[in-house]
Every structure is written in C-alpha cells, then in structure tokens.
Image (cartoon, rainbow, N blue to C red; front, side):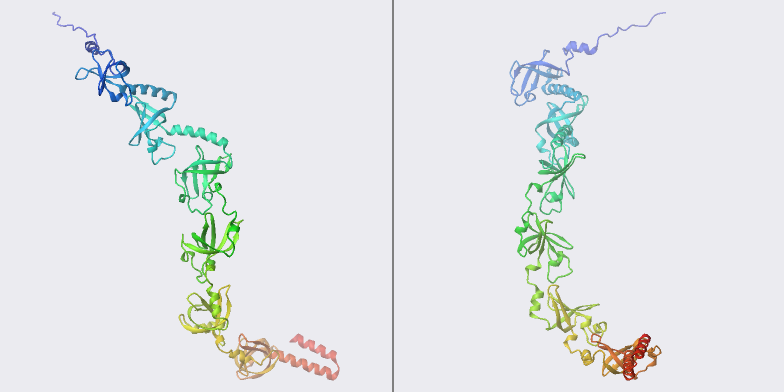
Length: 560
C-alpha cells in the first residue's frame, strides 16, 4: 500500500516577529520612548528615537512657550512605525497624555486631588484639562449649589477629585463639588468652634423664602428672618436680597445643641426708634409715603425704619365705612399729623384728615343749633331719615322727631328717598361728627300744648271714647287720656272695661302727664280711695274716735 500522507513543515516563527525583524519595529509602537531633536524648522521638529528612520512632530505639540533646540532629549509617543512616506509617526501630545494618565491613576488610587483647568462645555457638563489628559466634569459636580454663570471658573487652575477612570475608553470623570464639600466641612468645624452671639460675618444668600433667607456662612447655614433684614418694612425678602448675593450679618442667636443660627442685618445699623419721641412731636405735620394698606388703615413711612399707622377712622372727615384703599394708594405721598407716639411699643398713630379743615365744624359754624335747613333724603332706615346737608355731610332725623301726633313708624311712611324736605338742627356733636335734625320741631307741639294746665293730682271729668281689654280711652277737654283696667275702680267687680260704653262720663284723678306720648294717665280708683280717706278724716274729727277711724282706714287700704 502506497503511503500518500505528505508532512507539511510546522510554522514555528511568529509572523508578526518576522515582520518586526524585517522592518525594524522592535515592539515599540504604542509606547513612550526618549528621542533626540536633530532638526528644527518653522513647523516641525525632527526626532531620532533610534530606529531606521526619524519622526517629525509639529512644534505646536510642545506648547506655545516651549524653547527647543537641536540636541534636546524629549519623550515622545510612537504612534505608528511607518507612514505612507516611510517615516515614523511620533506625538508629543500623546506622550504627555500617557504621562498624565499614569500620574492620574496614582491620584485615583491614593485619593489625592489633581489640578486642572475648565476649558469647554459639552452636553451635561464641562471639559477639564488635567495636564494633557481631558476629563469630563458633570454639571452636578461643579459646585455645592447651582451656579448660573460658570464663566468666572473657566480658564483658571483649580483642584478636582477623580471619581472614575477608564483608560480603554479614554474616559475620566472628575468632581469639583467633592473638593468644596471637604473644604466646607473643615471650614464648618472651624467656624462652629469660634461662633458666638454678636459675631459679624460675611455670608452668601443661599435660598430665599417668604419668611426670610438662608445665608451660607462658609460650611454652615443661618436663617436671616425677614423682620431682621432692615428696620424698614419689608413685605418679602426678595425685595432687597438675591440668591448669590454677599451680605454682612450678625449672629443674634446661636443654639449649640442643634446648631441653629439666627442672623440679623439691621442690627448692624443704628435703631431709628431710639430718638423717635424727640424727632416726631404730637400735633406736628410731616410728609410720608404709604407703604402698606390693610382693612383697618394704612401704614405711612416717615423715614427709613419709621412707620406710623393711619387708622381708617383718621383718614377722612366724611368718608365712613370705606376701605382705606379707596382713599389712599401704595407709594402715594401724603401729609400726616402725629396723634400719638409710643417709642417703647414702636408705634406712632397718625392722622390724614387732621391735615385738612374739619367740614363738620365749618358747617356748624355757619348753621348753629336752631337753624332751618333744606336737604334731600339720601336714605331711610329703621331708626330714621338721613338728609344730605352738603356734598360731604349728612344729618339724621330720628323717628321720634318726625311728627308730634304720629308714631315714628307711621310718620316715616310719609317720606321717600330723594325727597326734598326742610328740617331744624336740634343737636350737634362735632367730635362724634353727628348732626341731629327734626321735622316736627318746625311746628308747634299742639299735643303738648293741649296738656298745658293739667298737673298730677288734678281731678278731672273724662268722657269715654274707646274701650279695649286693657282699659278705656277718654277725652278731657280735648286732651287724650287713658285709664288702665286696674284703675277703673277700687272694687274688683268694677274693673271690667265692659262695664263702660262710649260717651259715659266719669271723674278720675290725673296720675301722670306724659308729654312725650301726649296723653294723660287717669285713675278712678285713686280718686275713690282719696274720697274715702277724706270721709274717714271728717268722721274722726266729728266723733273724736280716731282709733276707729285709723282701723277702718287700714282695712280700706288693705282691700284697695
């Protein structure tokens, strides 16, 4: 049998090694080697690295300020053994990058900080030059708090902390925030140790709320309450503060247990209320600016930090029950008179209406009590009529002052809103801003006149005019009279009003004269008792038996 198997010689030589031996690479591609500058022209430096040919490196890779000369030894990166022209491709930049990567790996492992320069923006962050190696700085890692403008941080050398490195992918991630937090922690500990009430510090406004602002004191935050920002009224801290603003503050309270710090800015200025009583005299008029309007009045600023309140009742002589905002407006310049000063309570009471003539006093001076006026009924209420006396002043006619002979509720029905009427001024109270008017006072009180000549205790003859369940009405010479049921007779049986009819005449005693209602109050019972008493006195006088008369009188009085 013929053996047809043919043995093929094994290829023991490495093909790459054969190539290297053929072309002289010696395995240095992708590594950093030392070379010697043998030639320099306008744009390139020719470097000999001990291979078959030299390489050229652009001068810009050495840096703008590099001073190179022939014979200098430099470290270069062998990027490729030969290009298409047969030259070795070298790079100074890649050599520097390799050096930087080596040093950065040491810093990553040891936790040491590195210096770098922020030089560009990319999506999600910024680029940082770490001495030749390019790193990525995420936007969240640039500072402890958000920064609106990063321009001041660019182009300057500053420390960074390496967070992650991936040489294969060429990625380096760094943080400036970590460095700042470590620095703040150190500064915080040092600040807490030295902090005390009364300390004056510089801080940065970190956050603004409705009730105040948080101030970064360099590692620790303090609260600046809105009431401690300025002596003057501030509605919201944003009126005077902005985030990022540097301010000078004083520590007004420090709780070591919870490390809460209360700060103040106004405490660094003199208190304007110290001499307020001497500066603002009661009764004097000053100029001010309306700073705030409420339901109960308006606050007027006399100077920075000094405000007074104009109560709604002190704003106008005539405009009552209106909101202060309809009389003055915010930021309006006004004249005010000082009514009261309480420096201890930090209060000044002011008046606006006192700076103008009192129209009530002026009107009364021209129209004294007793004057007859003409006016239009502006309103009708359950207690009377309001009459316009001028553009600003109203007078009131009470129900009881409308008519002599009608009840007020009935008399008011004769009048309508807008009706022109005459009335007499019957009373004035300038302080309370009231003018009382009367219509019935324009005529003689016929009812009261009819009662003239009658007095309590008189015995009169009355004619029954009407009967009701409570008593009887009667006429006494044209004057109205009334006898209550209990006063119709001394006897119980005689006290029934049904015992009487219209036209009956009877004698009675006047118990009271009521000019307000225009009626006489009569009592038949009182007359009967008086007559019986007289009879007993006459009997006692004629018989001399006073004891019997006294006993009988007592019995009659008991049964009365």
